[in-house]
Length: 78
Image (cartoon, rainbow, N blue to C red):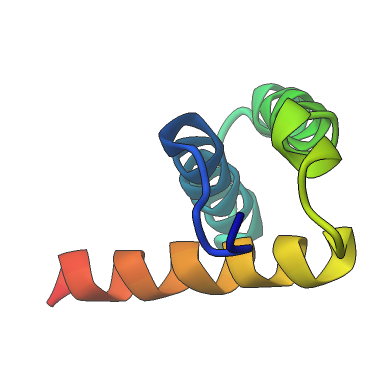
């Protein structure tokens, strides 16, 4: 299995994590408690996703997932 063959739910979770992080990092975010809780839940889903049991190098896979999510977001924004 190639490290870039991520399941859709894992990519969507990474997108949601990125969006939540950006919302929390914005100046004067609203409802920071809810954002922090959401970020924590998403972090747990990302960390313990069953996909990570199938890849030979988890750190490389996590990095590739973050890069893929950033790239897809940039493409969608354009």
